[in-house]
Image 1 (cartoon, helix red, strand yellow):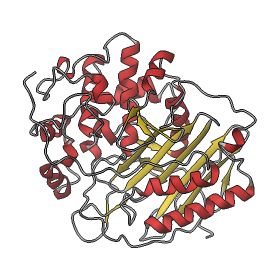
Image 2 (tube, helix red, strand yellow; image 1 turned 45 degrees about the horizontal axis):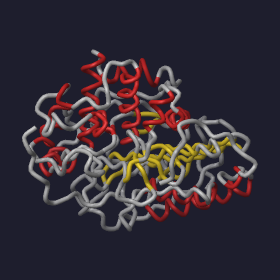
Image 3 (tube, helix red, strand yellow; image 1 turned 60 degrees about the horizontal axis):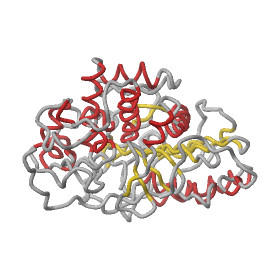
Length: 423
């Protein structure tokens, strides 16, 4: 299970290793550009005040611990072959850490910088579902509403609820697993796609199972929820997110693009999902194919703030947030999924993967700690794991050994979907 939007599982042989040299550390809250490189735990619905034992939950970021984090990140980047990364850690009373590693452009050797914009991939889901829950709080829709009330032509649309979509329990086929979709994306990755085109790739398939029968990660669910936000609010999704989420949350550099726009500064994004034998640059691929499931752009500074906001529910009513964080079972023991949010080993948040970029943004209520990891590649590790997971796991083994972040790679989708009964 992961935040991958699109993963061709047959092209994962041997990405070349690129050693990422560490840049000088940034301390405090400094996110300014750096110079040339010198080298199923149950979540709580509100913050937990740190106790005297909380140092066991998240270690103080002393010079010794920072050095251990540096070594862990460098080792993980070497393992996965990532060109560059940004890692941010913070907790009240424990210090703050933000550092860029490696290169942003392999051709020029330009270093990664902590102020870069990045494509966040499936972390977008946390924003889209927050929008849905805000509409619930306003009384404009209910989680038990069938999706067919808002969108026509959905298989099982009279039975699948908005809650099923947010919980990843709808049974709808994941459009990004459709071979024709993959062929179109790889054939012309700069071509814009509409939400309806994405749904068409999904709806040509029968459902995989009946609503709420089990968990299955599907980007189709979020495209539908994005359309619901637009229909109920009467606004384009990008405008609703800006006015009701990123604006009130104080996230000035976070937005849903309308095309391939990608503000500077940013790193080049490297992927092996271009269809050929060589790694490709996916920086200017049009992310409209991910839309409400994964097209948003942000910065490490904004993501660190969002980690706390989404996990503590400051934009939602307390009861709604508590309901959001009820962990439903997944195929992985100890890892739960709420409404558009992961709960893993005490951490609350989401990861993201888009060709060329990966990220993890999570919050640990026990210590009020945040962790953000950003990479400029989505090339899987030799064992098939997402590279951002490898880095985040290595970091948390150092800073939160009682709460080691991990999300297993997504298994193959079922090969025999069940027929759709009449609804």
